[in-house]
Image 1 (cartoon, rainbow, N blue to C red):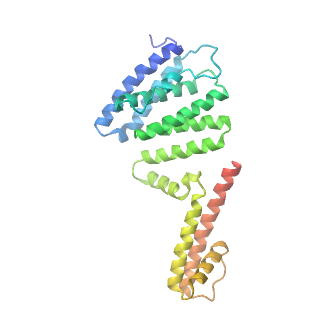
Image 2: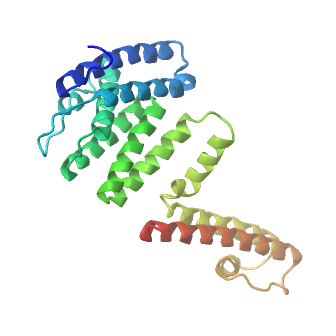
Image 3: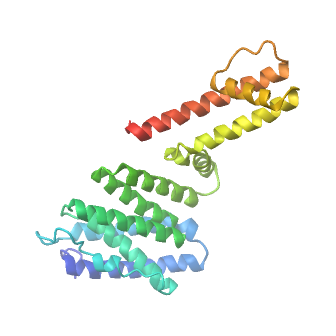
Length: 272
């Protein structure tokens, strides 16, 4: 097969297999050297070049089954009971095949796209299990793109959240990883705004304790003071200076937390 010869459905399977065999030699070498995390981005660049080369020469038949996927047998070949090397090879082969099928010249039906999105999700989860975090990010990104075409916002949000999670895992220690970790802890990268409510409760508990330490009186009165000030900051001229400072700090925390919560919630509900 020359580099210029077109690839049909049958010959593209051979092309994928050959490229995956070559690719997995590099992956296995990186795993043995314990440099997979550092080299995964470069490996993924090579993966993209292999996929692009196949797509440039892929010439599928003009007609195809409306419900089935061309490389269904490749997707089904992955088995968690396989030995480690064979399992990873089957997984990467499925990822390359799905990438080719999703970006190929023929348009897929809605049913085919739905199946392919589910396959990308499964591949992403398995890549995560194999600690191939950037490969998992790629798979989840493709799944999110397909769900967007299908108008499935729940599926898209699920995959975008998973994509961000894998990006965080793959990031080296530094500002980017810290930023992603902070965004995940606070609100699940914006895809889980309800998490902010737990932080609101934690803030109320912390400020109630501080106010109780700085101000004598029944605990329920301190709780009431903090709750009212959190929802509606008010004048505290009659209170000691230490309490005033605590309530001002609490007001700023409440302003940021409540504003971000409603912004994310509105975005999630109305897709602004």
